[in-house]
Image 1 (cartoon, rainbow, N blue to C red):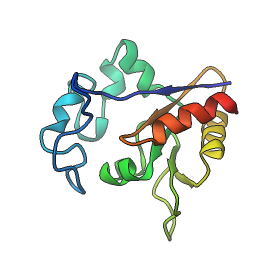
Image 2 (cartoon, one colour):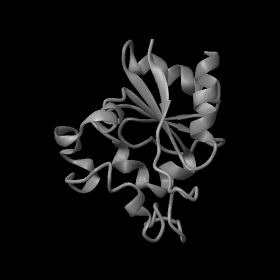
Image 3 (cartoon, one colour):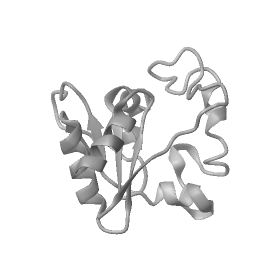
Image 4 (cartoon, rainbow, N blue to C red):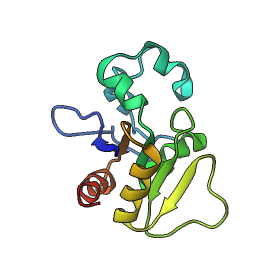
Length: 147
């Protein structure tokens, strides 16, 4: 069975994005600085990231599924439907949007079901990575312990 891991970058004073977060500015003004350590040398959209990562960075990019809250997903532009390597993205949301989801995205309205689906898809020996600005990442991690 897979393990659920919550990963994110945070400044020492508790911020995970810069001010003025919004569409087209998902990390806020200057917020990219919190994440540069992770993707140094990767192209836009994370291309080539797995080729040079080591340690925790390689482990995060090896996740078999990604769980994210809807706000984070939308602010990130949905990563174009592919967070990394085509792994499924499970978006925890209160309301499923109309129309088909992009790429490998799956909208889920129940946190326990979201965690269970991500763990199943990630498979044995792989991790599903939970991430987000609000409570979605932490809620998915708690739910995964109960499933």
